[in-house]
Image (tube, rainbow, N blue to C red; front, side):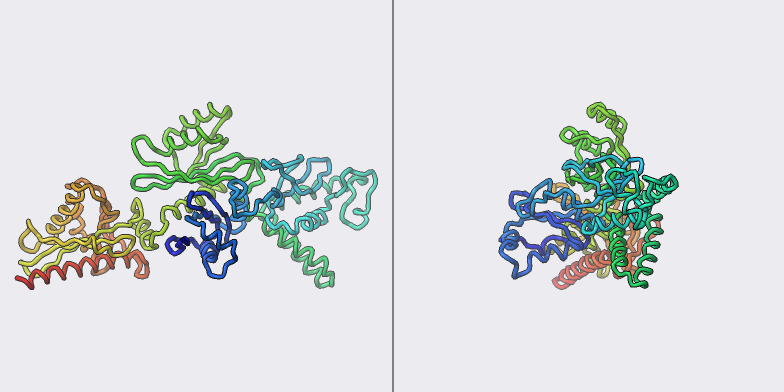
Length: 526
């Protein structure tokens, strides 16, 4: 049976996708600039046999968002190395991304930095990178060496060599004047490798040289400079996913539902984001973010720095406990600036993707606009239909995932109110509905909508208070399509083109239609 791709929500952003089989095991990991376009392409007709075989085993697909395709490339490689999926090529080459090393010699050289399998850099000196376009790395190093007059000899000679005579080196091996200039050149080289502003200025200089070379018909030189410019343009694109500094940090983001929480982590070891894991736990008793972190580190290696998306309870106590266990000082901080903030925001975007899975965009909008604790997948709306003083009925429509669930519609004869008192009638039918659900221990909605203004909303809130439930409740006034929410003086006006207001209007109109039809049926037989 082929996996029904139409039943899942796929983001259009860059990232990686993890295809799983019936046992929940990852069988393929891929990256894409546009996840939706790439993943859907697997399910088109006329695929080759191996692709068809892969698709036939897919039972689930998960997504991890990144900020750009370069980050997706880095994370994909690390995840493949970790899980070794059946349908992926096993990548044995660790040196897929170029790092540059400025040695710590008296007259430093510029080299390609090599790494061991566990991520450590070989050799001493300062590390810069990563450069994610590997095809031209040697050409780039050659251009940088020439631009900053960096020596290429393995051992410093006593006399200048050919590099001096062709203008690629000032000869610090022989001339004292060149030694002072050499120190300045290396300093300038390091500054452009670590400073965006310096890099921009150096890029402008190279662009001018490229134009001059082209004008003087030195086309090989112009092409060389062009390739250098292309390569230097990628120096910052992957720095969140793979950092040259040997930092040891783990990032945690958390999102809360009504009864549970989802946590996602990125683990950075030796400057490389290697792992991404997801967990969930029920919000019962003492279950909280702090206790989760403590339990997590009973089975995971403790890093020097833990970065969280929010302040946690008993932070110092947890830090002390982890410090005692690890044997070194452990810091717990909130990611509020720089690279740490970017990583936390990326995790939260991924958690939003998980929580919003298969949810209609309008429902997500409603959650954000009304500041609801969760996506309102189940919405119930109430209205009163009057015809004179004798005929008044209540109606309720129920929407599930933004669409009418007509089996859940309910109609009410007004039992305790006489005359035309819409507020009291709303209070009655809302109370009756949720006393019954409470008695039957049935599922409550995620959002209650009342057709009306502040008065109707107040009446409904009074009924909910009597029942003892705290389900979010708002009202929608038809005259100006204003949304009223509790404890807020001013109404909210949602743009007419938003899916969120269209869902509210649809359920309001359905409730009204259902109530009017019920009212007419009563009058017809009386």
